[in-house]
Image (cartoon, rainbow, N blue to C red; front, side):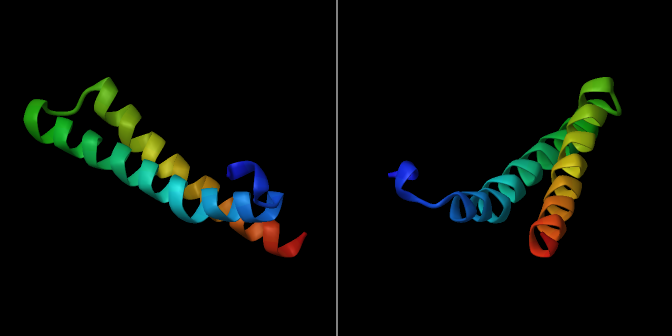
Amino acid sequence: MWLFFSRRLRMWLILTVVVPLTSGLLRRVGRALEQRRGSSALSRSLLRAGDLGDRARATLGRGRRRG
């Protein structure tokens, strides 16, 4: 079914559904790890990955509207 969606619709679905859910999940796991065991390389990496997802969504979302 995914193949029947246009490229633009697939990108929109990814940017509005998948990226926010994934970045929120990564951030939540990172915070939970920090609360239980303190700051570690893994928890910092998970928090950065969550932030990266938000930044990528914002950047790609803006670029798509202009182009």
